[in-house]
Length: 305
Length: 321
Image (tube, rainbow over all chains, first blue to last red):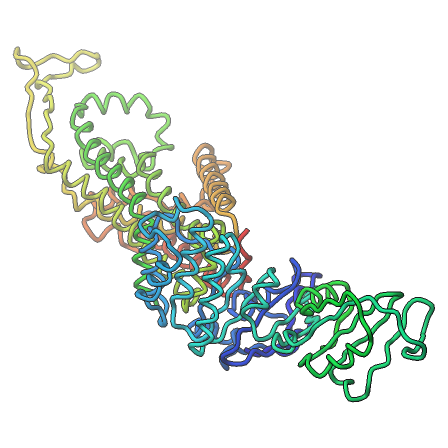
């Protein structure tokens, strides 16, 4: 999936602005952003539900503005608010979607429904919100389409089912399928995605490889510096001198009064002798996490990783 | 051009409404034939003659009604027949886009590899097919009613009117003679074929109109409101046009002016099977022959469908609320 300066405007409101993204085949790509950031607009434009205002888009090599049907032949899409025909029973819904989608597979849909412990004998109208969501997931994830687009798939689900859905996303990746995964839940994105794009106000605010992010840590400790071990740039805050050999591993080393914060990238092992030499106390090592990236983007400070 | 799976689903959605409407139309037509047989033609004539001053409100001349065929032809202007047909047309037409959007089900549906044109045409196949079967159910009710009903009529005794007086003197001393005969001996159900087509054309026009408004909207209740507003406005225009010669021009702007089932039946009775299908004549006061009017409704319905497809193909689909 590729977009180039993609834009979508409603009257005077820009829902998407110059959005350039690329999702590689076989990866799980996360879409993250606050409400109204443009995640769903992006997905719906890619499926041909919305006509783009500017830029280009391509899904599996096909422009959705030219042939959205061909795009949807390759895609299995779970909307953020998936609603199904209320007059049909669960099993009939799965049969309907398996028959209408060329990549549909009723047996697989039934297997997914079984994993989600869904009672397919009920009419959709008598199902709870969570059950309807599970049914929609079974219809979408059970398809053999090469590209899965899931818009907040775990909304309304209990923790056990959430975990199973995330398992299924991982299995889809292992089966060579591409997944675009939109969610508000940072931990889910961290768990299943290879890369994540953070949108804000219709723009791409930041892209992050989760593999790189997982190798980042923050070390927080109490410290009384020895004379000459730091460069003062203010009364309270100062940058810490880092040995040249560790410059690539230490992204930031900051002293604020008696507190030191060191942000690292990559393997921690080479840093250990240096950390020991600093004489730190009450040291705590924590994974950097998507929360920090999200907060920095949301707080209008884009972090470079 | 259509999708078999979608058609099957739409049939499943519509079958209950269709069954109710079909049953109502079939039973009503049958019962109406029977009720018609209960009212003696002489009595009927006497009653109708009381309203001779209001004949212009009748779709056909009163004289056309003094036959069993003419009386049964009134079935096509009965409110319940129009109501069932219009309910089907509005219910199905309004459902296709704004109904699915309102329920939020269009999102999942259009996530499948189906073009919007194909979706709309699949819906149209079920709606138009259902409409055709509904009017056929009405026709079947009439046919069954005609086949199963016997008529008992009072034949007035021969009498002589004394000139320049209001006196009629019976020529026999016996009472009036009653005669019983099968309705089928005086009414041919095939005569109503043209009226059935007129009813279908009316339903098709309203179906097209509903589909067109549905393709523009995202709320079904608003679509239905819009269709009903147009329907009532057109009905009022038609009524006012009939009420006074000064407003006669309004009739030409109402689609009800093209719904003339009783006139069509009168043409069959007067001129044979081909008469109601003529595109020109025989009425010197009209530009068109009787066959043009249902075709105008069909053309209007097709135009609305074409507009609906054009709009639906281009519009942005709002996300479910």
